[in-house]
Length: 276
Image 1 (cartoon, rainbow, N blue to C red):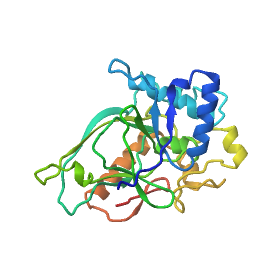
Image 2: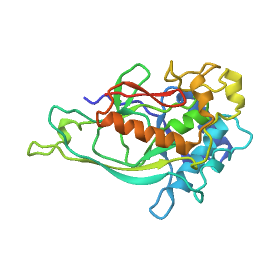
Image 3: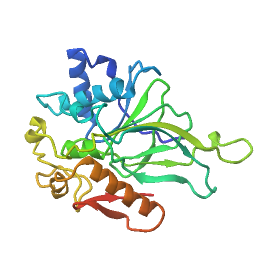
Image 4: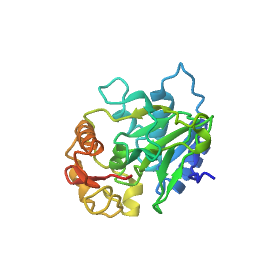
């Protein structure tokens, strides 16, 4: 029996209707502080449409609305498709590993804004729940899995959570009949801010009202909603390209075994925890 994570589904076709936008915002407020993974349905996505315009921008406007920003294009203007950035669409193949090696990609957060994972019938993606349990993520045929990542956490003062996830060996019934493993191929779109965007928390009425003035990752707590969150406050001096380069360098050193610390400073006192 698979232990599936209970993820919410946002019907993005409702976003242009005021009543639908209100419904979506209320739905986001119910779950977003617990889990940064969710489904997007009603997207009407076709091969001819750009993911950037049909998926990313509506969600950025929704999150701006949730944070009660007067300008709902605040995040959109920091993710212009025409400007230099680091976003990309990629195929990722997880090759079969030894039978006693169940974790194919160690637990981590993504360092971009939002990650879009397209339908993958082979199970293996897991999220780390607030209780510390790993749970499998279903991949419905009509939905795209979305993951909140580091940049959006920093820009939202820690309110929107960058969620730890990993890839594990698929269940036994998805292994090849002859006894070997099959690789797991994923199509993933990593949406990232423009390279010179400063990772400074937004001035949000919602965050002010609940006492979050720049919460987020710090040296003492991975996530915090305290008024004083030194890690995020220090990070406002850095642009996204600097954060991305630092994360890539430190992640590589850990994954190839050059360092073995479970918690490693990335930049400016902001730490990243590594998981099995």
